[in-house]
Length: 120
Image (cartoon, rainbow, N blue to C red; front, side):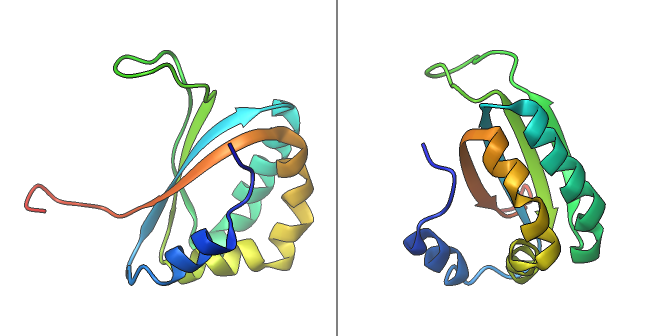
């Protein structure tokens, strides 16, 4: 598992052609959850400037179907666009809190998703 995207993953995201809101699904495993909670508080504090919304934050209870997962917490964050996401993670304010993410996370999966309707 990883902590940061590869260059190829960043390029795939930027070249996806997706327009409109994007929900980032975070599957998290911690080495120091308290440090990560400091990071999460910082994200909450500055996220509104970039249109960021917390859609869901919760701990994994158990796996119901499929292989057991090692993730401890799931967070779903919505951004108005991929551009807003990139501006957020490139901002000086974000860089000021990133150390708590690094201290807190053991590993992460980050999946960019888009809203569907029943007709999709």
